[in-house]
Length: 162
Image 1 (tube, rainbow, N blue to C red):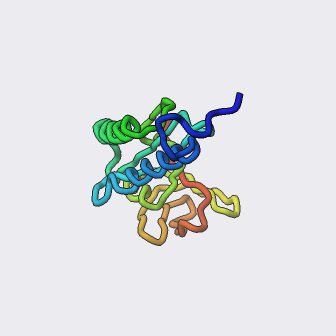
Image 2: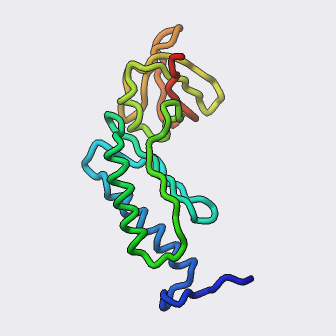
Image 3: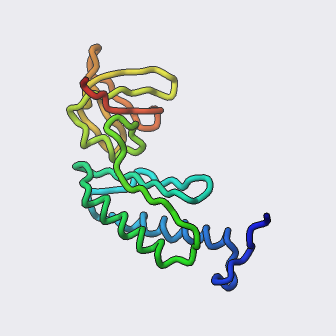
């Protein structure tokens, strides 16, 4: 069965255009929601069928449930107002404690914690995060301090003490 190209309510817009408009509207909301605040969007990801949107947040001092709930409500209101006619499962949360970092802003809050760092060359180092700045970070390894630029790192993650 061929999907409708233009739903009856949309006037001029096709379903792909409506979806593109919805994604653009949500991205604009995400881009401006935390400006000047301690929280930030780490990742937003749509499922292939556009039935699920996952948004992961982080903060300079961590993330609270209230922050996640506030953003969830803002996105939910946008979804309710938009003429997109398919339900969207919305998940707003924070990455798990051992989820690899995806941006430099995530490092400073973890100073003092043990990290595992894998470089683009595949070399792995473990050590306590000593410093983090705009250019990179330094960990204290068994062999001594080791400095990394963000560009040379494939993955960094916190090592949980179990």
